[in-house]
Structures are given as structure tokens and as C-alpha cells.
Length: 294
Image 1 (cartoon, rainbow, N blue to C red):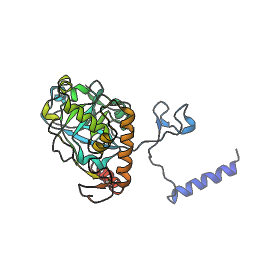
Image 2 (cartoon, rainbow, N blue to C red):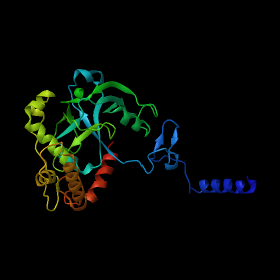
Image 3 (cartoon, helix red, strand yellow):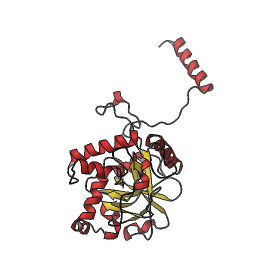
Image 4 (cartoon, rainbow, N blue to C red):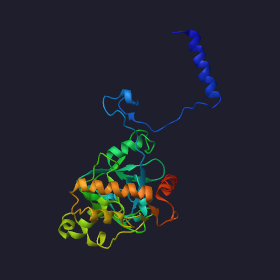
């Protein structure tokens, strides 16, 4: 080591710090809990190129009276916490989706008496972002399954429906997002087909204990107008592609690509304080608004 060069570097770093050119702070990054440090590309045996994904967390408040499984949480604000990439569509929520056999938990969040219901994986992720009473350690108050959540009445921000319900969806991936999914059938083909199937199949509703009033009265809420696709884009694309079932994954993937791409690039908001604004302009504003309301 060259002591002269070492001294120069130390002086330079101190000088830059004193003038505010460099700071020590937090940033979003891929992190290794095992090593307790950031995990850059060259540190990984696999997963090179993977970057943090920026989701907006939608807090859907569970309305009283609480079911027996949640009685221990009475007196606290309890939320189903869903991760979304499309906060601008939350006006059109008709329900939330949960995986019946999925494993969930009610986790304490730092500050207030808020409790988030989501997967343990998502709670751990949030704990490393400062959303837990004990840093890096999620605190689970109640262990739950998706069956415990079906039928919960919810109040969701922005939604035109004052009360929506948690309903079963068998295709949810619990290793992605929070395991809780918002449903906007006007602009999400998967949601449109899933809601249509639930409405059309009384036997399926009966199997999962879904009451008619939780699903049958809810209709598509037009929120975005897209040239050539109109204000019920998911429905039109599903009809155009002749999609008959939730199991037609390739067709649904194409339907999703079309509606999301055209919605973002060409869509115009029809509702809310940003009505008349292009979706690509309104989206960051609504995302920032959701973050400020947390």
C-alpha cells in the first residue's frame, strides 16, 4: 500500500463528505439476509441482472365485525395489503383475490396499531425496508390461510365501490408480490375472466363458501378509455381473442400485454382528480399520492 496515496484518498473522501457531495444513506437494492449486506451482480451465484421491483402497496382495510380468526386483532386497524404495478386503476376495484390454500399472516407494522395481512415472504421483505416493529424481523400476530380471508369486507382507497370482498383465485403465486391481489376487471384480463367465472359458476362459489352478494352485484367500472378498445378494454380483448377460460394462459398473457401496453401509452383517465389526463402522466402522480398517504 502506498501511504501517500492512501492519505490523499482519505483526505478526498473527507473533503467530499464535508461539502455534502457524498452522503451515507439507504437505497433500494438486492440484499442478502444471510450475509447481512447488499448483494450485487458479481456476488450472486445466480440471478445476475435482477433489480428491485417498485410496487405500490394498496391498503384495503378490513371492516368490522371481525371473524373469529381475527378476534385477537379487534381494536387495531387491519389491512389486506396488495402489491400493484398499476395504482392508476384502483378506482375500478370490484374485489380482492386470495389463494384459498395459501399461507398468510397478520403482521405488525411499525408505528400506530396497523396490521398487514400478507405472506411471510412479503412481510420479511417489508421488514428490511423499515416496516416492522423490530428491524429486519417481521412480527406475526396470527397465522392464517386464504380460506380464513374469503368473504372479508374491505374498504379500499380510490375504489368507487364502498365495500368490496376478498374472493378465491387459484392462480395466485405466493412467491410474488404479497399474495393478496387487487381485482380491476375493466382493464385486467385475468381479473375479468376470474370474476366472470365466479359469477357464472354457483357450484364453484358454494365450494369456497362465497355468498352471492359478495360477487354477483359487482359490475365492471369503466375507468380508462383506450382508442380501439374503449372503456372496457379487458372485456373487449378477451372477446376478440375468444378466451373462454382462465386456463388459456397463452391467450391471457397476450390479452394482458395488449391492454397494459395500449392502456399506458394511449389510455386516458375517465375518473378521479386526473380525469382527462393521459394514463402515463397520471400514473406517477397517483403512485406518489398513495405513498404520501401511507
